[in-house]
Length: 292
Image 1 (cartoon, rainbow, N blue to C red):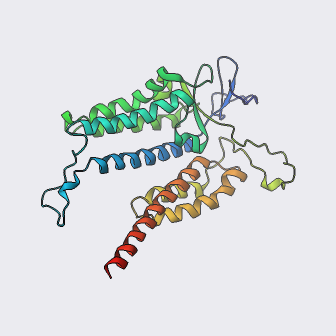
Image 2: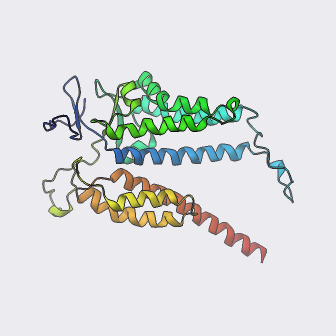
Image 3: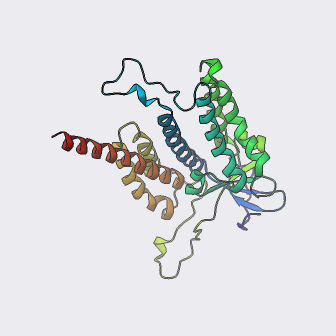
């Protein structure tokens, strides 16, 4: 049962940002922006884990004093299809286990969203968590099997994208995977504040929960875009993303605009990509100093 007891306004079939459960519970829905932000953070985390697995799986004997003419062998630890199976298992476990046990992955936890059973408002548990992953994820996994030579992988990814985009035209933000599994994604009441004045705090500094029809913060959107681009610009755009994310905080937390999830995603991606830039710079400086 949700801790939100404020009833949703009469919607006439339109979006209100709230949903009423069959048992009478009222839940505040996570916006499309917050869900996209969580998805970006989860993708960054999985990418980092996959890179570690790939590096562990490299046959470093291909590198000596001089790089051999042949490309390095990527079947050092997990030979053959084992490499694909390990990467798939990590992704599947990350998407299913946290949702089944707690209703949220790390990305969802950071932006303050949670997956719940659409009937009861409780954690979806194993059956629904598996179904929720399988609708978009299983086609991608099958299409990526080495037996197909990755020739149809684009079909799986197209279906994956459509599943997640479908939530944008649903009244209660249910994507096809949510509808099939019977789940909702809600906004968790973390540090929830009303527009009433908080003791010792000026009224203009009170946090305001944005209406679902409120505009998105342009700074939050720009922060997320720059944070993501930081990974292809060696962290340079990530630094810009950090600055924009900090400036967007007033819009999303006190200005009544939407986009807090995107702001957080931009901040995290910016920090990670900027850290990569700092690490590479440090390695270059140390290498130059050692060589001089």
